[in-house]
Amino acid sequence: MLTIIKISLAKLIHKPYNSALSVLLFAIGVALISLIIKAETFINNQYKTNLAGIDLVVGAKGSPLQLILSSVLHVDVPTGNIALDEVEKIQHNPLVKKTIPISLGDSYKSFRIVGTNIEYLKLYACSFNTGNEFAKPLDAVIGANVAEKTGLKVGDTFAGVHGFMAEGHTHEDFHYTVTGVLYHSGNITDNLILTPTESVWMVHGEKHEHIGEHAHNEACEHHEHGHEHDEHCGHGNQHNEHSDGIKHENKTLEHLQHELMHGEGLTEEEAQLYNKMRGELVISKTEPSQSITALLVFYKNPQAAVTLPRAINQNTNMQAASPVIEMNRLISLLGFGLDTLRLLALIIIFISSLNIFIYLLNLFNQSVYEIALIRLAGASRLKIVALLYFQGIILAVSGWVTGIVVSYLIWGLLPQFAFIRNFHYVVFQKELILLAYCTGIGLLAAFLPALRAYNNNIHFTLSR
Image (cartoon, rainbow, N blue to C red):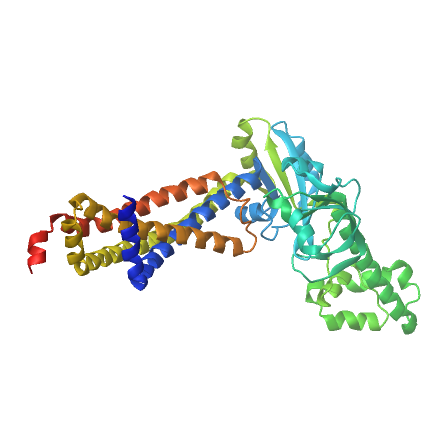
């Protein structure tokens, strides 16, 4: 048997280009299927890990999927804020076991700053590489990827940027202090900066007050040069009378600047409008300490799944979305694309099997006299059949090995994907099933050439 394998390898190596083409076609299909297997496994693992048993997410009205993506997976913009008094009603609902607040809005080098509480760390079973949990406002616990990409470590300070872009308006008056760095966990916390909810309230609350004071002081400075309304900066009564007849939304930047230049003060709404037109950050009129972005809800009993979401959606100005339902909907959309790719890969493998079949058939036709001589030397028909079958198996298995190696290399180069730690035994199990499939394809491709070799009449062949 060992001799048959050696002869099979020698014959394939004798035709290196044809053999390489057969292996390459097979490898392309195998690599594509292997990547799809990894992607499906990765998505399912991340889906289960990041949802972490969250039963319901409550947030501002809008797209339910957007609410889940922004507040659970942190890959989209929030739908808005919800009032804290409404949140407290949900927290005191007898159907609710536990809630975790989520406050968003700022980031640092594109990593989101999430205002929450200690329960969020417990939810994802976070463990610390260095440092400890946050204990007071402006303390920050950073994920492993955040530490690697930014270079932050325990004791370092940084200022958040408004929004989720790498650059933007920076809250220079408020600096976070890193109190802990988490271990790699393979879930969403690897890419988050966690801080008490009060941190978000403090940063935006102080900014809100600062904007109002800035516009008011600016108006007062212009007023001192105007010498017309000396008592205006102290009380603002004359301005209120003046602004009653003008709709704020119809005012232009030039109009507001004109008022400032002539010593006229601005109301709070006008000050926000003025700063908005100048491209500065404008905070909602609602006090920051009275709102959060979303609330993660955990049911006390199964009855809550039936009554609570409907009650919130119908009776409040908030929306309630089920992470499981929305993520299943998203995965079903992704599944269509993956099924298409899988079908394409199977077609490629089928084409490669035809190529192997044609290659082996030509190889048999070209070496028919050699095979006859081998038979004449004492080799049985079964050994000749085994010779051709081994050639088909070697080509198919070589294609499988090459495809698997290529898929691992590609997966390792993909951004945001870990090379080894995110793989699961299911991946290797499915890849072994793929190996059996490839081996079967190789045997099938070699069947007809092997059958012709078995039926070949050596006396007739040698007499020609």
